[in-house]
Length: 356
Image (cartoon, rainbow, N blue to C red):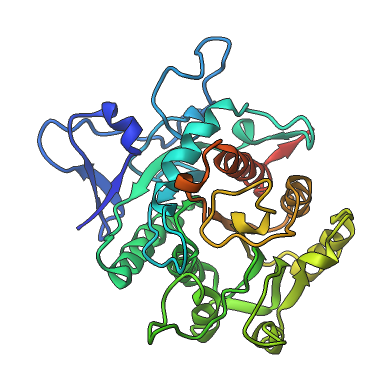
């Protein structure tokens, strides 16, 4: 049975755990004495705790200090952690990403003055905790993730995911496509992640979009990969992506320029059809985001990352993820801080978010 757990820094919420029942799409007490989270159906919109009334080091460590909920029912959007890194090919540690991102998110406010977005006045948002993945079995973890996300999406809730390595995007896309069909994709990252297999294994963080193509999860004419770079074993490492109809935007084509014009083109390409955003933190230069498993030099800047996400505002975004944050290599916490801010920007870009 699948468990959706709250962050370990938030275990004070109850004396036990809550367990997911995929057959009914609800969370229920795992054992007597567990406090059931309240139903949010028809509830007023949740607001992050204000620093004027609660200092940042006080309270439960949820994403943006939002309420912790055990069910997606009644929510328009929710933050979900997937603490998995057994699909990494280099430096591990992304399993600790959700916890660290939540910690850094305590500094975030409720509105976005730069874009005028008012996400918490527009949507009912909460933190659904972490998927209880199987760290000893990657295939089983993918199954568990898919089951959770199918229930979340079926409830009409848009998931915003805290990773975890990039493997997690594959089962999430399986769940997204089950409801929406093949979706467009804005993938921001250093690598295309279209490898077929490594050491005989066909599922890991470098194969996620190859498997997604194989299963018809993507509308390949509406797939864009931005920030791609790094050395390779061949002179044309992007051949597969381009052969499928993906648009590949190399990092060097983004150097020292605004990406607003690029995003104007992408907006036309995506039209009003369902779109998924997958952001690997390794898209950013390691000077800004050193805490990741497979860093590559000469990457994007944080301001360019903001331009990409803000460029998706108003599109039919049906899900987002921020992956590959590895806290053991993030001594300053800056990588997780960037990740928390980018997830907030994704929330602000969702459909139905009011702007002023």
